Image 1 (cartoon, rainbow, N blue to C red):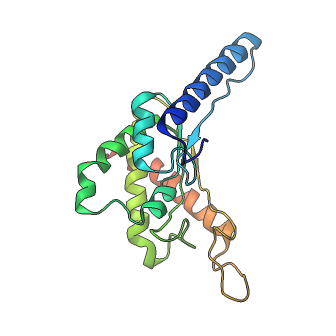
Image 2 (image 1 turned 45 degrees about the horizontal axis):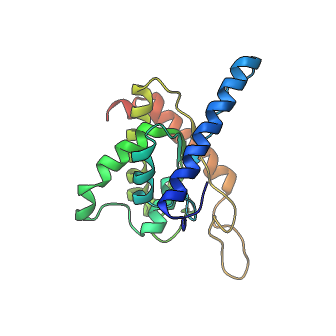
Length: 198
């Protein structure tokens, strides 16, 4: 939620109000005996959590703010996979901060110049997939450590998210197959203890 152009004061006011609303909904559902709702805020382009820096500022003020981690938005926005030498000074600690707040992971692989690769299993995307899986392992290990369920969504979308062939507008990969295969891959990795090794 929010907007990437808001000043930090407006952004913090917005997330403070969102946490108050979630608390009111939680109390109301407990009183009524209904399922407990939760509100989660996605790391997303054009939103208040569009960049690692803005997210760090928000989490410094509200460390308990529940996040939906979609790191593909950060990769395409920053035009890198946080592997520059200078990124080593801040990326691991920010990823740990995000991991401690994440309640849902959008398991989508993006590239520095595209929000979503057509098929992350393709050999040309191996390094990207491995980078994302390493990040997801950090997130899922943090969730396991705090006893939270691992909520994983293989969020891949049709065009304009899915690359298409010129002139035909035909997708370059079968969307349903990509969603199913990346979802199965991550479930298998978790079942085999990938996030336990972090």
